[in-house]
Length: 500
Image (cartoon, rainbow, N blue to C red; front, side, top):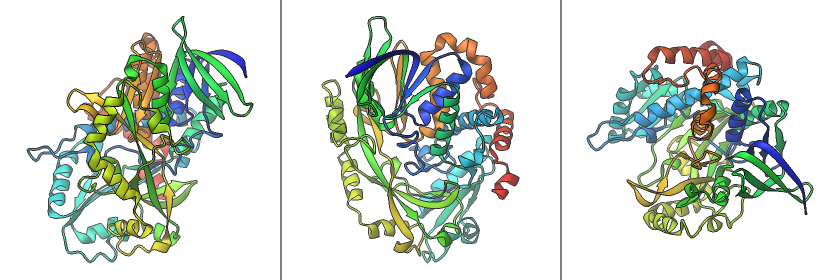
């Protein structure tokens, strides 16, 4: 039974980090706008943004080797690393403004300083890491990066990993202390608490069934209210779909031309989590290795110190797997339901191209606990099975689309903003480094969806994000200013890092 029709200015679908960021920024820029958030679960930040469902890495390309590929001539391409680092600096400025303005409190609840380390084995990989270090170390965004292939130095950096290591092969690491661990679940909840205080209408236990354009060009969203068992209709001029893996099916419902010829490939993940406090306290870093040959970028192995509920934890993974669900709380029919006449050939082409990937995911799914422990022992030689439990991470849906360079059905690793030509509806698709670059995504969305307001909003945006409109890569002095500002606001300065 339908019993409700309401009108609002902006509808945000999904109560995760994307909607929380977009809503918070909009409320600062256009405080009079009416915003409604729909979330199908009972609480915010329970899917991709939840602290147990992602790696919590403040992705700034400090240690992720897949962001610095080796070119055919042997040189290192650092362009993507610079771009991702710069995008993360936008997020840190945004969070700093909210802390300094007392709109959110206790930043140590969601961000902590933590060294980021890249670790490799074998002569070829050591050479690659040294070249990567040489390419990045002199750049102001990567200031303070160190390189070592001295086992004694590595024992200082990563004692748990070096202890009991008998292999005499080549080993090397880079370390940079300006890395962070981010609890995106806690951050999402803080931002949504702020929005609630700004009279934003946040509706939990509400799932969006359909999105249709009305005759006047606005959007009507059909919503099921689980609490009452009723259907509601909500109309808005702007709709943002930030529903993690659930964004693709909702985007398809809009029928906009930009939603055609796009598919999604769901990937599940598992982590091993350490339950022994004696082991946890021996490791203090995020240590990223290199993906195995033939493995996808999202399967880069890493051993991470995490802070969850202000308790230090240790996670290793991810172990990839396959599930047809687009969300952890989704349906086994999600993948099949996303195949439409306009994307069926795109999907089939991707399937044909990615048979090795599918085989890899199935093999990963079949691993026993002991086989996963053997992979962990590549990092921690003396790891004991009884010290580690298995947790299921969040679902990720990688974008599949037709590209000029990759041809039909190309699997995209990363995030992608898809918007209508008139900017009235937009959706964020894909996975990592999504949460870390949420502010960059929102600013990109503003250019597409609200170009008529940008001039009016620009002074306030610059107050919130001092580097807005400027290239940090081209302004080394500004980088120093931003690092100092965000370190003070977020408690990331060295003295405070020691205290925490």
